[in-house]
Structure formats: C-alpha cells, structure tokens
Amino acid sequence: MTNTDNFFKVGTIVNTHGIRGEVKIMAITDFAEERFQKGASLFIDTKQGHVPVTVKSSRLHKNAWLVLFDGVSNINEIEKYKGDDVYVEGNSRPELGDDEYYYDEIIDSEVVDLSGNHIGIVKEIMTTGANDVWIVKREGQPDALIPLIDDVVKEINVDDKLITIDVLEGLLD
Image: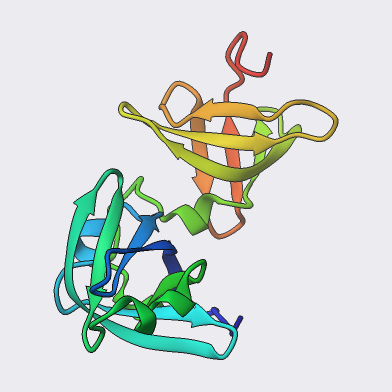
C-alpha cells in the first residue's frame, strides 16, 4: 500500500463482473454518481503503488457499482485488483456546505457528552434511509449507535476530531 495522504478512499473493488473487465465496487462515498461517472479519474491502491484509471462506463447494480475502466477489455486485465481500494485525489473533492462532512472527517473522532466525559471513538458510519448512524467503539462495553440528528449531536469539530453529544435517556443502554 502506498502513501494515501492526499488521496481519499471512495470504495473497494470487491469482485469482477462478467468477462468484459467490469469490476464491482462497494462505494463509501455520498458522491458515487460523480465519482464513477464516465471520464472520472480514480486511483487503485495496489502493493506496487497507485494505478491511475479513467472510468469508461458505470452503472448501479444491487447496491454496488459496476465500473469499466478505459483500456480494459477483459477480466484477465482487471482481476488482479480484486480487494484493492479505490481513491480520488484530495483536490478533486467538492467543497461541502455547513453541517456537511466527509466520512474520513468523522471516523476516528472522539465522542464526548455535554460535560466533556469520554464516550468512545467513531469507528464506522452506517447509512440508513432517514439519517446516518455513527458506530462508536467504547472500552469494555458494547458499541454505541449514535444517530446523526440535531437532538443528539450538538457539536462537530473536525479540526480537533471531537464530537459533543447530548446523551438522551436510553441512548447508551
């Protein structure tokens, strides 16, 4: 794996699809349609380094993206990338509005209550229909599920990776 400082993960190649060289990508981005649109530049992170690729075509299929890259015409050319992560370069990320965050800005953030008491660390984000739910790893206790709603999440400081929540009754039970 190479240095990914200025790169941001947008998905993982989980399998190949058919014999024409399409790959199945599980996306971890809110901008999947933009990331995998025709002409988009991506990087496959391999043990040998970043391999630049350009999207030739893509389509959503059963909650995954089927993507064909320029210059790939059969499964043998792409199979070696199975399990590799797909990145975009940092400067190609769009600016977000207020109260919008990239997953990597939230993951590994410390979660505290209104009094500043440590609750845990955000280890994963689950996307549901209504709102995202943060999975917070707690020491010696089961993970906490924190819904991203205004009644619970009071402050997000991405620079300090610190999130303050109001622990409503039953939230951490």
